Length: 198
Image (cartoon, rainbow, N blue to C red; front, side, top):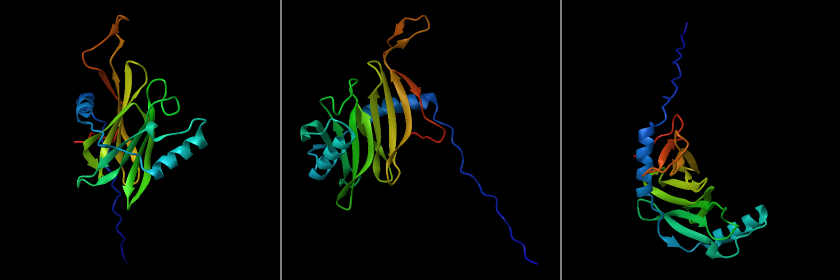
């Protein structure tokens, strides 16, 4: 007679979301630490890809390189790991609130590959890295006094959203009057399992 032993499957630990204080401290650090990288010209291959993409999806098109602000993403070794490209100027690439089309391309084996597409007003890379590429924070305007910030991390294939928070520079107080604090009010939208970069 033989016996087969079954070991119970252990689930990974479920982590609580970061505390409000941790998110507030990170939001302030992200604003000061975020860096866009050296501005460069958009490569031909990406310019023509974006020009073709826009003509397929909307009546507006990317007509010239002037509408695309391009920044290098550096790896720890100082090598170029990719490009961050933000549209600017005109109705085609930006909304009335100032949020503009935004793309991240990873440079791998001499070719650029799209790993994130979203809309932002401001962006910046942090010192922390995930799977070799720097963590990214984006800010988008919901209104003149309200911004949504998002943390993105590279998972080896794509940049994925890994947390978010809201920054309010004006909001209604308890008595109905508008409050304008010295620092924006931070409201966390981090989920269970989301972590703050060190």
